[in-house]
Length: 235
Length: 399
Ligand SMILES: Nc1ncnc2c1ncn2[C@@H]1O[C@H](COP(=O)(O)OP(=O)(O)O)[C@@H](O)[C@H]1O
Ligand SMILES: [Mg+2]
Image (cartoon, rainbow over all chains, first blue to last red):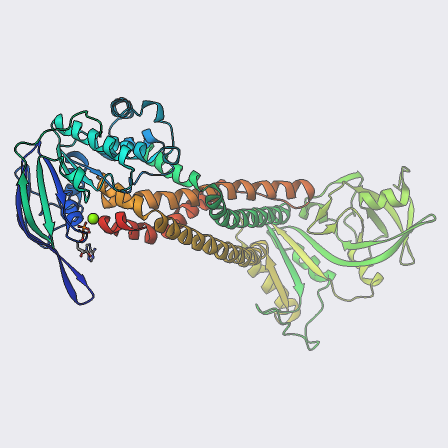
């Protein structure tokens, strides 16, 4: 469970203070499917980075699973990122010199897991995402959609409880974008908390809960009760 | 993170930029190779010269006419000093601890036997020469104990001169002419080879008194005293000093002990070592700058990757050690190849010029590699620290 209370994040640009997040308070239950929409510069990425402990709020309290994580040390935050949180980025951020499997293995290596255990986990995740035959390919030998699937495999191989996706379809064509969204939704159906930033209304409206940010503030928070999950329907 | 994985990750990034890694390592490699090569030659020379010196034993003291200060200037240069004479040499023989006393007059002259001639080195010496200089007579005998002032005209040949003058014939009992005087050959020395550049085989030994008149000199070039082991050098030096002072009424000789010669040699080699260290230090500094440069470039190129690693749960310290590891591996590999290169060239040099001794002490090898690793550490620490302190959000956003 994620609880944000009166979160502010200010940036100093020159001698001007930019309120990237301005008094954000909200709660996200575990297992939720949340989309964050809003105009460019409204603070969506800043919010996501904060949720993923890549950034610290200027003020306010962030509780993850009942624990105040804003006061954790750098080392403790790194551990939480490694165990509890998975990131998917618009730019994929795969390490170009490593194969798909090696990229997926990275968070497990950082955690110090034994090689044998790592190999089976990586193989399972890649298999699950339909990438078994691509595991020894380098990123530049993969299509955009495949790259993002490798990135999702990497984000989920540690079995985190929260998956944070910042415009995961932003660099993909419509078809592979929809594929990626569907994979993320399947993961959500299995229990992972999915929080996705998007500026594509069509993608955003698939989420059960839709947040709208404007100028660093939470503008609207809509729970789509008669939300129909799109499941495996083609688009 | 496990060590194996750590090394793997470090390895992949270095291999991904093979050419660059190679060139960067080369900087260190050349530095280490230079140091190893030069120290190998220096150390080889050291050992070579040392063994040349000590083959005569360490109980030799030489006495030269004239008082020289430590700066080498001849102070008694106004004709006030007395010549070093054969009588001095005889007096020294009476010192209780003197095992062998050898007067020495040296010069070049033409030696003639039948119709063969050869210009060669003449050593005017005494009967105790073989003992003092650890040399052996091959056939016949060495110059006998004789009247020191009016010795008989005997000559002993070096092995090479014997070959030149007599070929396969037996020289013993034959007559030779040196500077117009006739001598009888009574012995031939065993081959000794070259010592400190002097060919001891291309020589002829005659009594010192005869050499003095041959070269028309009144002073010996040198007197060597070999003292009994178990006596301290200082005792012997003091004894020689007071004896000669009494005979000459003043201190007008220079006494050099084997130890002093080794000390001089040592200080010369120290200068050499310092020069080598300076050259090596400069090339290693250049190598280190190469590593700093390449690591800075690598970190700029891989800013995204650093942000990603942080997002995946890497601690700052892990990022630091990953980049530090790359710098150290670059330097260590450079160091190793430098060692191979340096030792290889040293050995090739030795093959090509067998006279040039080379020697690479193991401790230098270990030291050189340790130096390389430390250079990697020092060169890597600033760039790696910068990487570790990057803000992960900024790093992920950078292009
Ligand atoms: N590191 C930073 N330094 C200065 N300003 C920043 C920084 N990061 C974000 N901002 C500002 O904060 C605001 C929100 O940015 P961001 O969260 O990236 O918006 P979005 O993802 O919604 O497009 C913007 O005005 C942006 O310029
Ligand atoms: Mg954004």
